[in-house]
Amino acid sequence: MSGMAKTRLIATVLVLLLFMPLLAGCWDRLEIDDRAVVLGVSIDEVSNQEGEEEEQEVSHVKGSLPPPSKGMVRIGVQIALPGRIPLGPGEAGGGNGETKDTVWVISVVGHTVDDAFMNLQQQISARIFFGHLRVIVLSEAVAKKGIENINDFFRRNPEVRRMAWMMVAKGRAEKLIEASPKLERVPTLYLMSTLENSIRMGKFPKNYIGQFWSNSSKLGQEGFLPYIDIKENENVGVQGLAYFRGNHLVGTTKPAEISGFLGIRGVNPAGYRAVVQLEKDNSNKTVMTNVTHRYSRINLDIKDGLPRFRILVELEANLEEKINGELSIDDPETIRRIEQVQSETSAMFYQNVIRQTQLKGSDIFGFGEQVRAKKPGYWNKNIGSKEKWQEMYKRLEFDIDVNVKIRRVGMNAM
Image 1: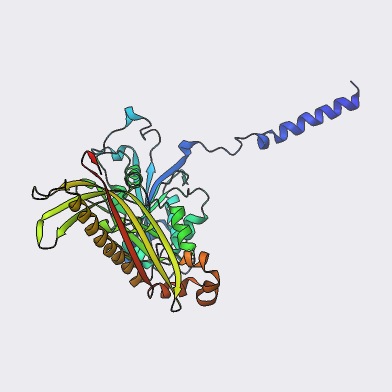
Image 2: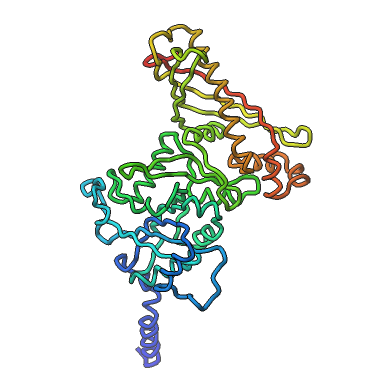
């Protein structure tokens, strides 16, 4: 080998050795034990006096910048303890006071969400990591005040998955991530599984945080979130839908009214039961049905200068129970009467659910998006903005027809 070739070979080897760390896939690695893995976040309102007292100890901007005029927030985080999270069935188990052995709950105050997390970072040595964030719980007071800053922070963070859940808590949000449910050692995972099991059982619509942000961004639709509360024995209950107008919470539904939303949207599977009283003055003729399948079709026309919607909902149900022995379910006429009464009461029920959202100008059903899609000329000429649709939605009329079909009576198919 010539001297020139040897020189080139040596130069090539030196260059490879110099840049090898940059070419390797693990040059910027961060060990999992060096991360503070955040599983859940709670956001509560805090008084200025209380917040300022705590802020003196941790704030990195105190006195250097004028604080925002919207007040302060308290951020609670649930951080996974390395090596303590159960990884398989053999390691799983109920709470029974074991939550403290798997997660660490810590809270801090700040003027904004970002400010609070900066203050939190000063209190823990590991870097905060949102890649495994599963649940964000907002207090009702924070949601009513407005969640623009909250949405902005989490939407900009590339670590936050769009399959996480955001929910509104009745009362303080922090108590939900501090809870120790008996069926799960990690409270955040229990909250997440509660909602996902509700979807599988037909008791709640699929509405991850990404879908909430998408619906909130549409001109003809508003977002909604699960409305939850903590019960006795630290059990979590879904109390209804928390519906928004823009970035502000404007109302909540009752638990049973979730089925109204699901029926109008035709979401399957169905999982709600209904009590059907065949005669108003005779409670002895009462049965309970279980809706198993839903189908809906929404037709749109323009009448007297306003959109007019006609909604057809078809429900398939099973006869679950008769309250007493006076009613003969072997009679086909009785079955037809049950179908008729449930159809009439369901139509009124759906009307009331829609009317409730109309009063607040919150179109969580997406009727405005149907106007944009099917009548684009009308939308561009008469509406054109989210604010105008919010006001027009209050004045609309809906024609609702419901057709209920009883498919099974106990073990017998109809």
